Image (tube, rainbow, N blue to C red; front, side, top):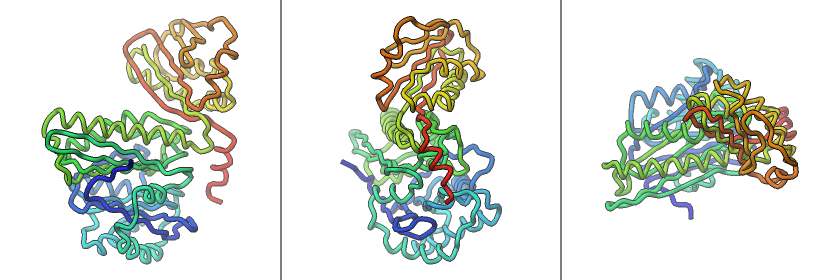
Length: 394
């Protein structure tokens, strides 16, 4: 059963930014100041909301929530885009009797166009008036673009002093290869946390989840993951045990959401779990995992349910990682197809046919040359992906 952390409210309305007959503007608000944390895109073209978020969090460790719009990214809009972004925060904050810096902005959609501020002027009062009337599922739906389903995950932790709830939602199906891409994630929690620890913990969890997925190798201008902890429960992170437990719960939520993004990949039909071990370093292992996961040839073979292992070893070979090709071993699940630099004998197509028909396919690469490891989840590449993105602006 979905559990909502204490002290948080939601509001969703249809502001008409792009979509017809669906909500596209969302407010997530804590009733009290919350420790805020954020991890953002490394794309050099950083959208206005990313710039404003980073500025806000650099000046204050506590905020009240997030203002999220779908349909327009407010990216590559120059100084005017920054002004527009700050104005949207002012419009909503005024109705809540808050400072504009109490809210973190997030946007997703088409890059380039500026906001229609007349629509924002009309939308802000309605958003404030309906605060508390929406639920997390409605909020998760309102932040979607090409997503096919809303993505939510939740968990809880207990200590001798009490318990805490954690709830996360995200959107993303295409432009996904986060490096911290139209990926947005929002996590709320009612534990009492130290803001510095909360920021460091979010970064660690993002590195093990959202930064370990790819759909198409594209990192967006707007990628953001934000986390808010308001201390409304009795759970305090005042010991290594309580901190470790909350971090484990946060990681579980982030990894569950990450899987849903790959599962919902634009046009996707498969989830490829790539595990690389035996590398000379973790960085080398990551290079190989990303080369395989982003390879159009590997991804299209996956879509065609073709166990074309040659494309996988070729991707590893061009990844830039240092390794001895005569020591590489490749498995699909438990079936070894390539060992120590040469193919394993047998009717591999017949053996692998049942595996390739599944939605979830495990690719295991062992380089036999060190302790470096990496994991990555990737989607396949289909005709529908091309259709979706060819027609995205029409």
